[in-house]
Amino acid sequence: MPRSLPPLNALRAFEAAGRHGSFSAAAAELGVSHSSISRHVRGLELRLGVNLFRDAARGVELSPEGRAYLRQVSPAFDVLAEATETLTGRAPGVVTVSCEPTIAAHWLLPRLGRFHAAFPGVEPRITASYALANLTGFEADVAIRSVVRTVPDVPASLVSNAPMYPFARPEVCAGIADASDLLRLPRLQDRRGDPWRDWFIAAGVDPGGLEPPEWRLLADLALPAAVAGQGVMLVSAEVAEVHVARGDLQRAWDVPLWGGSYMILTEPQAARRRAVRQFRDWVIAEGAPWRFDEGPGIDT
Image (cartoon, rainbow, N blue to C red; front, side, top):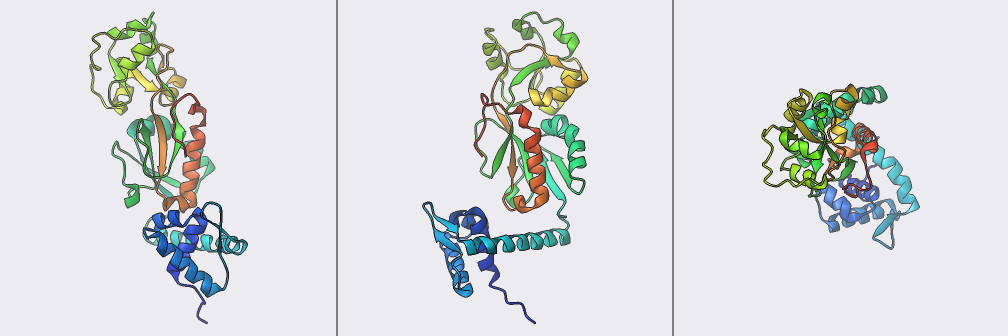
């Protein structure tokens, strides 16, 4: 017996509009016009003989019948999406992650054991790169990036905004009696640009003719250099945490420099997959101890 199904495009329009609570957001997700969403939804209502939406103070909202329908339609789309991902090699339990090398090696990887214990059926596939993956082109499901001034143009959540401190090996710190002593040490950093000048000013030290750091190492190489005792590094506290816990690094001076944050960016379609949501929410929870009201952040 043939199934009695409404047109797929009409169902997609309804499901997206119901999930977002907005025709405009649904149009943006599906890459169509607002009028197209409205037309599909109206046609679906006429076919079903039910009002799925009703006018609200801001746009539209689901009717009781619409909420009941969405509760059944949305999981059906998730099943179809996961079946397609399995067929094409993107298994439902696989989450592709693009992550900056420093945060990947020194913050994310040391914690992954806890993630695997909590979600044994999910496999994060991590690529370390400074280049931001094209999320809308499906190069990755999520990306973890440092953000200083610009707001990402995809859904993003704050992971951490811990300040930077100068860190060095304990034996290097033993020779530091004043913040100005750091002027004579090789200086390393975990962010592009030259934040050392701002840090010295915050510490009450005249940077004078301060030159840029002697070594132009990328951050993922600079941190191992600091661990090896080859200089003092200005690095965010959450990145240095694992090395501090091991006794390899300690704060060289207790003056923070606020600036920038780590965000997790999520491809909108990928966010519908349970495995992606589990990984995103876990990363956000892991970053909770490193989120501060006085630091920078982005509303999510």
